[in-house]
Length: 257
Image (tube, rainbow, N blue to C red; front, side):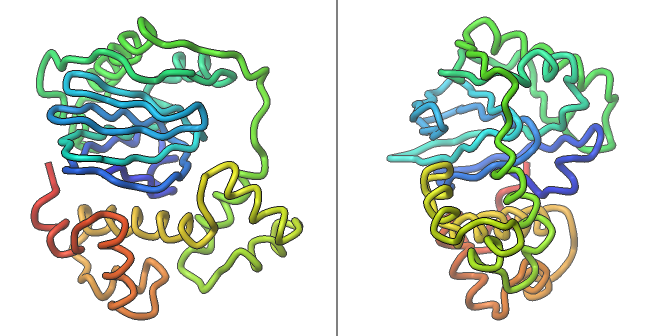
């Protein structure tokens, strides 16, 4: 499962790896690179540019600040590598004003690279070389389009608002007021940009943060539910299962690389 816990994804030299079975996740956005590589079955990546099937032996690279989601129709076994801009800054500088019309490319791991993604435990220069090699493979297939350097200020402001307030009882109404936008405009914008509503976007962020805490801390599930903005463990479990197709306890036990 991808991990886009905001503070960590923005850290210099942040990198993490994770495996997932039958991945399904709504449209969302974060500020780090994300590589997904399929080892068995087939996974669908949904982006602003369309839907793309990723088959065994293929991968896709998602740029920072680009909306994306996942769906599995039958079966998929996939690896996710999340890494900060600082690891491949030259590459980021090249693509920051571009979007990719088809992010899927042929990808066969030359070695088990997960060892380079143990945050803080590996040689960062070796990790950078591995990541640059992946970026080079991506560029051999990439159909890049210049977006003239324009950035989506509203989506970034919305992401920042959720990042800073997701532990509280926030809503589309409170977001519209805080950002200075009309409620109906913001609602329509979210549906157009992320193909989802604010509630789904917020729950997606909360559950991603919960996954990070489950994998990287010894906090209890009840503690994590509270830290992620849920008033009851029942509500937390229901949303976790809805988004990840597994329980928090099963996720913690069985999904770590």
